[in-house]
Length: 176
Image (cartoon, rainbow, N blue to C red):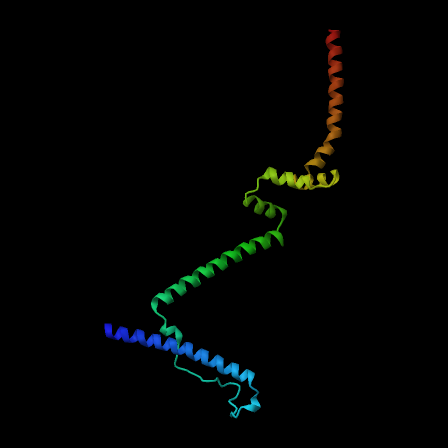
């Protein structure tokens, strides 16, 4: 068996060397054919489908050893997984930036480790004027600033009523 294995290994090596030499020879012939004008050559036309120096019996996959095939499969698997991970990351970025909402963008920023107070400071610091700041506050708080502004006259009326109530209470206490 060892003798057969040794002969088989030599055969694989020879066939692989033959394949490499054949490729080099074909590239050389193609290079010569590209440089030399066709009318200078005394050749019969081969046709568009014929290959220069065809070899039909050689299948390189059958002559690769198990270690090479195994490591090629591992490298292919690792490359595919890396590409899938990159596709997932890019798809997530596209969803957030392209078709996502500001909440999804905020989630992405927070996932990257930026604190919420830092994000709020950056956003509010980038507001140009009070009106823009108010619009941002209203959008983030679902209209809280507008509702507070709408309640302000009611609160002021209640404060005036409380002053009046306190004054009447003091007058009643003095009358008693």
